[in-house]
View 1 (cartoon, helix red, strand yellow):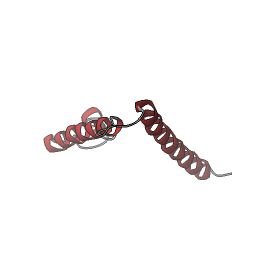
View 2 (spheres, rainbow, N blue to C red; view 1 turned 135 degrees about the horizontal axis):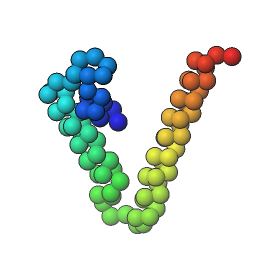
View 3 (cartoon, rainbow, N blue to C red; view 1 turned 90 degrees about the vertical axis):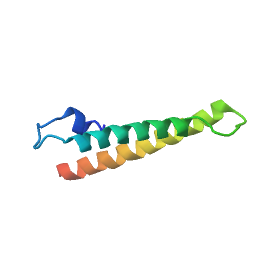
Length: 81
């Protein structure tokens, strides 16, 4: 989503994104997408592809849950008593 902001939002929040910022956003999205693909597909032989996939999915889920907990804790504190 971070890379989509300069492309989608346009000038709604100030100056419009220039060509170089749009190019950087597209490049960042492409590199991130490729990186995610390379991280999910094993590049060496593994004993069980399902076990490998489960480990990747489990780690991703755990990290996202930590992020949600941090966000929830921050919004709860900023709301006050």
